[in-house]
Every structure is written in C-alpha cells, then in structure tokens.
Length: 157
Image 1 (cartoon, one colour):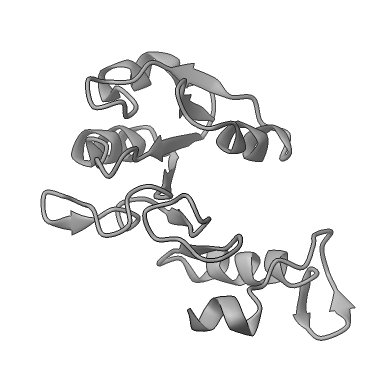
Image 2 (cartoon, one colour):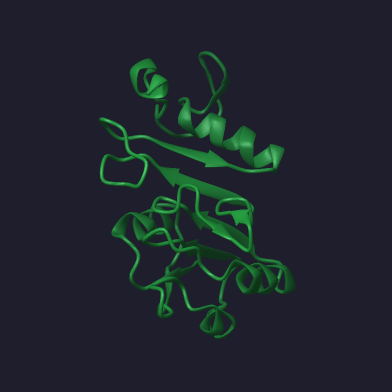
C-alpha cells in the first residue's frame, strides 16, 4: 500500500496487520503524499491518501492515478473533518474514507472513536461485520475480528 512517509504509525500498523507492505512516498510542501511520486511507487493495488493538518491532499491527481491503474483509494481523514479539495469533502474521493474522533483530533470525543464512509455497499457490509464480532446476524460469526462499536455515550456526543 502506498502511504506517506510522515503518517502516524497507526496507518502503517493497519497495513501490516492485514498482511500488506507499506510503500513509503515523501510528502509534498503541505505535508501530504506527493502525488508526483505515486506512480513510480506502485507495486500493489492500494493508495492511502492521508490528509494532514486540515489540508486536503491533491485528490484530483491522486484519484486520476488510482483510476488509471485500477487501484483502491483509501482516505485517512483523521485530521481533515470538513476539509475540501476543489469544493468536495475529503473522504468522498476514494473507495473509502476513514475518520478518527480521538480526543487529539480536529473533531474529538472523550475517548477513542471513528467512522468509515463509503459508497460501496459491499465494503459497507464488510465494515459493519468487522466492527461487530464478524457477525451480520447476532451470534453468527462469519469472520475473525473484534467488537469496535461506539457505546451510546460516545455516539450521542
């Protein structure tokens, strides 16, 4: 997975925990992945665009590269809640957008929380299973995973 070299370790752990190998790309002048270096780093099927410090990565170029090479595009929007690129919200360019609500983020909670957005129903169903013991139906585990749902207190905030 292509990932900016200056991302937080959580991005890299997410890659390695799933059997992937991070392919690091240097940042641009805004500290986001330098889209001019992505094509030379393509060795797999995924690009992780991390939007840092409220600045959106150059999503028109990154999306164009992903489309031309038939790559999945994942957006890490932990620091870009409400940010836009060319009038479009971050998290809506790629196949999936990942948001963190950890207390140090732009939009935080009193604990640890997050959200994932996607327009792909298959991905949405998979994420729902991953956050709920691997189940579509209560007590019927289909895949190995954990319980990662928000409690009512966090969800209400």
